[in-house]
View (spheres, rainbow, N blue to C red):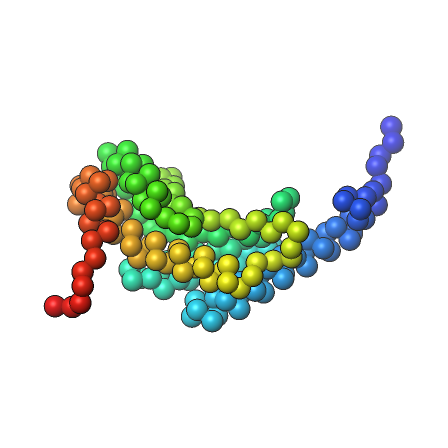
Amino acid sequence: MDVPSCTHLVRGLSMTAFYTETFEAADTALDVIEQCLTSSDWSSERGEGSTLHCAAPTRWGECGGMFAWRDNPNAVHFTLSAELRAPGVRQLEIVRLLSLVNERLWLGHFEYWSHEGVVMFRHTLPMLDRPGPEPGEIVALITAATEAVDRFLPAFNFVVWAGKSAEDAVEASLFDTCGEA
């Protein structure tokens, strides 16, 4: 039986060149993201592999975030999470709320991970035929994420802790006041 050599070609590159290209693309992407986070006053730290952990200041406190480079296809995945341990009896209403909230978002979406007890904003930027994201894409993404958390995190708390319906919670989160009292 012939064992294939590690020097076979992948997309016209040797395996060494392919992995070098992948790591360079990940570093380039994370460098751009890191610069944007610093400019936006988000603290960040490189994690293992191709990840960047960050802390996002929101109206409701700091939320934990993570950017991760993914291969095949190349993409930057972003998550921003907040703790939300919902009792089992409120799980169905959380699912209904997710649907109502997500249809109002222009970028990204929310998910609820019941086993981890977190509500999470997620979005993936495809990096097809390019080494990394543009700074404007990252700024738009972190702006959309923090605006979504600022606007809708109270709705999740209304459902879980105040026993409100998903419809009432969304309506309350969309209510805007003019000026200050």
